[in-house]
Image (cartoon, rainbow, N blue to C red; front, top):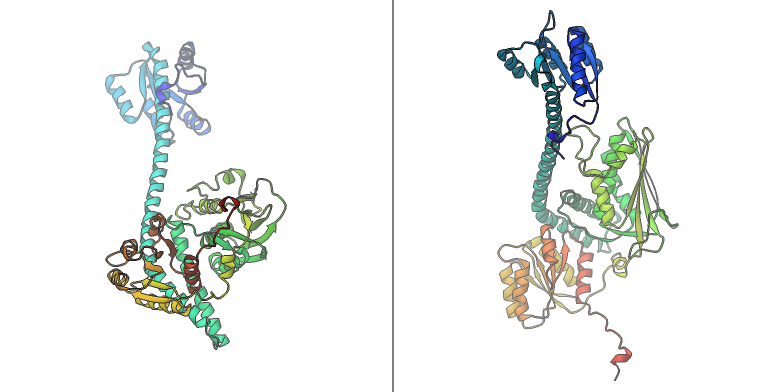
Length: 539
């Protein structure tokens, strides 16, 4: 942005001037002088206080040029009238006889300049300087406003970072607790003599625990601390599970209607992130329906190629899962829609919106290889259409719906400092035919590995423990068992990125179910099928 003083002299644009004079001839002389110096201008003449007030109220002026002595009133009165409008219009005093004291008083009161009538040639430069200063003030005000917005955004980012650190710090203990709850409930469901009532209660416990874990992940996602956990999910099932959360967000005066018909297709995404998308869109719709209304959530598969949609790698050719969220609210005009997904953009009142909800939606949909389209008109509500590539569910994920088969006579060294969780994991692994060596600390695990005479096939270790962490334990254990496989488990989301950089281990994030854990161990301990010999391998 160029400094204001770079404007040409005289200005290329037409200048509108208000001349305050009690002598019309002097006003014409002022205008003639400026035009002679190249100004393109129009001017109005105010010869009384009432006329001045009226013209300032009705017109916008670039400069006010005012005589000092106005016959019954003065330039001081005119300057006060201008100040009363609270408008930034340069005020230049032109006088036939203005003493130094009076000139200083005008400058102190806010006048831009003063020019003696016998030196009227100075007026052109005085007007140019006043216009330049006014433009500079406008630039400074704009920069100050931008600075204020940036400072507010920085403050918000710092606040979200603090929330993220707090949430990440609490996640470890919380996920341990959730893991214990889920594993106990799933062990209960494994009993064949369980009554229907007890089975229903166990299922409710699992659902509530998973909801708690999901809420934690959503908080971490919003704070930028939660990495994506992509998996094949059925969108209809996910929406059904999220319905009670959406109803709680919408309130009693908004009706939630769902029409789910995409059950034959799955998408690959992070379930908690898709729940976050649904919740953010529900909140957006709720805020657009202040007097109540209806939020419709629909799903269906789209088999015809849609404009702008192309099957991504791993997708089924021409098959998309469409999720449509529409409200009966106030709608949006084209101007609002053009900025809809920009971070920090919001049309809500101050302190009622962060401007991050829809930008989060956009980011998650894009991360999931999806597309998002919006249709809205003022007074006609809004519809958000999300398109996700349809994918085939893998054999491993389909098998997650059934009880895992026995893994066989393998030995696992389990290192977990949380005793209740360690006991549950140990019992589950033993029920699958595994031999489990328990260690409540890093030092104990290293001692067991050093003294155990047989083969240890897998090290299952927590990442963060008192004293030595999981990766350090793995390094020591490998000295005596170089072929051991490593599975890290953690409740700290900040650990995941670092752990995944390690070349010698897999990772699971808490909370997890017994089924998920056993399947992961089975995957690690099952040898990969041998490649068939090619013709070039045959002698």
